[in-house]
Each structure stands twice: as C-alpha cells, then as structure tokens.
Length: 185
Length: 393
Image (cartoon, rainbow over all chains, first blue to last red; front, side, top):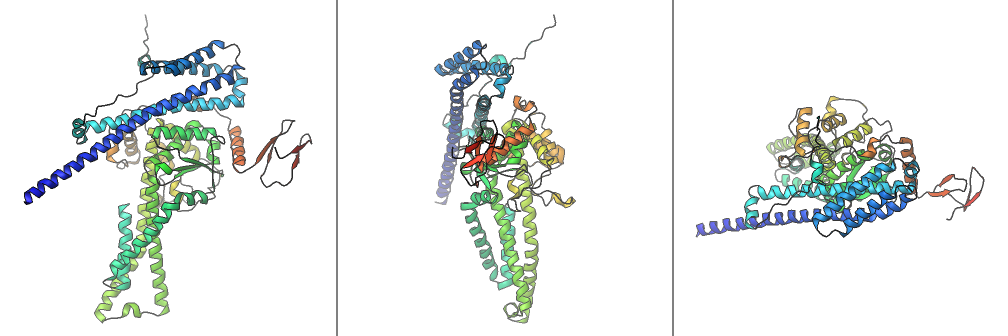
C-alpha cells in the first residue's frame, strides 16, 4: 500500500514538473513570435514615415530627384512584398537608399537647419534604431528559447512535444557579412 | 533580502522576550510582522505615486521631448517590455534619473532637466537602458521591499529604546521586576539582550540594505551594456554626471536615494567606511568596469571586467553567465558630432517652461516671448518693437 502511494506521489510530481516546463516553453515561444511581429510593426512605421520625409526635404533638394525616386520605389516594393525573402531584400534596399539620402543631406545646410526636417530626422533615426533593437530583441528571445530546448532537463519535455529550434535573424544581406577582399596585384 | 527579514524578525523576538517574559517572544514577532505588512501594503498601492510626487516630477508626452520619448521606446523594444513606461521630467539642474513602479507593466521613468541638457543621444540611451534594466529585473520591487524592512526595523527598535528610556526614568519598574528573584534575573538578562538587539539590528539592516542596493546597481549597468550593445554610452554619461558642478538634487531623501542612477547626495567628507555605507558603488569604479568590456557586452563580459577591476567575486547570478557572443556597436552618427551644448540648454529650458504651463508667443519682429502661467492681463507689449500682442491665441 505504502509503495503504491509513493509511486503515485512520484508520478504526480513528475506530471506537475512536465506541465511546468511545457508551459514555460510555450511562454518563451510566444515571446519569440511576439518579438518577430514587433519587427514588422517597426518596419511599418518606417514605411509610414517616408512620404513625410520626402515631402519635407523635396523643397530644399531640387536637384536630387533620382534619390527621392529610389527611396519611393524601394518603399513601394517593401510595402508590396509578399514573401519573407522578398520583404527582407526590399527592406535592405530601402535601408541603403535611406542611409545614402542621410549622407546627401550634409550638403544642404538650409535643410539641416529647418525645424521640420530636424523633427523628421529624429523620428527617422529613432525608427532605424527601433528596427535594429527589435531585431536584437528577437535574437535574444530566440537565444533563450533555443537554450531552453537544448538544455537538460527541459530538453526532454521539448523533444516529447516536438519543439523545434528557431533561426536567428541574419545581417541585412550576405554581402555585408563578407570581409572585403583586398588584392595587392 | 532574506537576511534582512531574519534581522527584523529576530529583533521583534528579542524585544518581545525582554518586555513580556518567556512567552513574549512570539508576541514580539507578531508585532514586527504586522508593522512590516502594513508598511508593505501602503507602499504597494501608492509607492510610485508618492515617490513621483515627492520629487515633483511632471509627466511628459512625445511632443514635449521627442528624443527622450524615442530613446525610452527604443529601450523598451530592446528589453522586450510589454508596455511603454510613463515618462516624467524633474525640473532640476542636477543630472540624475530614476525608475519606479512595482512591475514591468506599470513602470515609470523620470529624468531631470539637467540630464537632458548635458547628455548626447548615446549617453541618454545608456542612462535609460540602466533604468530599463532596473524595471526588467524588478529591482524597484526588491529595493522597495528591502527599504520597508529597513524602515520597520528602525521603527521597532526606536519605539522599544524610547519606551525603555521613559519607562526607567518614570519609575514604573513593576512591569519587569515582578515575580521571584531568580525569574527577575533571567528577565533582566533578556532585557539586556533585547537592548543590544535593538541597537545592533538597525545597523545590520542598514548594511544589508546598502549591499543589496549596490549589487542591483552593478547588475543594472551590466543590463544596460547588453541592451544598448554600447557600454561607452553609459560610461561617458556617468562621467559627465560625476563631473557636474551643479548642487545636489533638491527633492531627495535617504529612502528615495537608491532609486537614482547615481547617488543624489554629494559627498562631504571622504571616509574609507563610505564603501560600506553607500547605496551606490563608486562612479569611477562603474566607469572602469564598463570601459573594461572590450570583447563583448554579455553578462559574462561584464562579470569578467568586474572581477578584474574590483578583485571581488562576480555580482552576476550564475544563471545569467551563459556564453553569448554579442559584439559591441559603433557610436551613432549623431553622437560623433560635437553638439552645441548652449543650444541644448536653451531647448531644455523651453521644455521645462512648456511643462510648467508657460505660453509661447512669437512677435512679428521675430522676438520669442515666454510668458509665465501666473501672468495677469490680456496683452503684453513686445520689448523690442513695442507692439501690443494679445495673449489669448
């Protein structure tokens, strides 16, 4: 009889233990998903900001039509992207066009002094930061989740319910990761 | 934290023993617990509101200071907090900041006008990240609970010692010298123990409280480095704050001190003991640790740098010491430029006036008038072109 009670108690404890870990894993996975959707929120914010930016700067930079077109095109491509691969490519192009534009601004002192433009510039700089911080947070959450899946004892529960590892968010493009080759020939 | 609770409860136990004899120990314990519970309940429901009101902090929105608002939101995203903390500005020239609120959902961040006037974007980000890590680690809850325990301990021992003093001079010795002669002696011994406990307990509680507060500061620094990926931002902000000549914060007391990013009390005399009796680690040490993080920004990198500089064991809990390869980032483009400090000062002045209900008028001659909220009358005369301007715009 006592042996039976002990076995039952151990079983109950084990079940409670498994439930606890399972719930923790679900919580972590939801946080990963939430972090992923945060990135989209920030990207959307960037899209919304661009018409405002172009409108503010256009009057001062009459001879930079090509730059504005590049930004507007990149934006519409990013907004219309269907697949994740398409979106990440378009967002990368948009980011590049924007940083080119910010370099060009240095040549227009009137624009730089304008209060309106300063306000838009702060919003744009902050949005770029928010995008990179939301990616950083996504990677942090993925790291916690993957650690939990791989470490004992939670890995046993993770295997039982088929939790799979998540991928980290990569750099903007593979080209950025590569070290530029320097030849002396 | 647990140790502080033990100190408080032991004090209650001994006082009970001294006052009421053998069975009194648990009675004293009960009194200590009740005091602690009541104070905890008050500070749980009202703590952050009391603190914000006591420091005369004014709530701000995005329009008042977009950069501050944006930096807070960036750090909220980096920390993955569920809700945006409320943001407050304190009208004080001393640069400082604090966070409050008992959970990440209901947190507030307050910065002084002096801080906004002196720091560039990266430095402000470092300071906000430090406060955000306090929120993320629930340090405010920890420090508040510990502070209440400290308060209860001090209160209890004060009440007991004063009661003793008046009791003995008033001549009513009947209460504790009754009973047989042997019992009286045991009672006297208990009384002596209770007095010693009442004198030592607050001291112990203070030291434990300070140690807890210092440890939390280090951890928040480590968290800030990890969130921003840029320890130099916080290091240079701390340097600017430490070298600031303005007088100490006007609205501060001993209880609220541990909430701030740097100790708001300016030191008068330097003593060796001050290391033990300070709520904050020395700023120079914190800067050195942050600048020693040359390889990465994970908690492990902070802990390595910490042991190298202080020659002490790590402050970081073992669970956080997993190996992570996180590289440092570059300074932001805005921070690289030398900003015009004077202009920044004037902007912050305008912000404080707007927060305090000033009215801004721009005259046709280009002069900007700033009218205080208690101004009586409907018109003002421009001091430059003597045009009469209507106030109700």
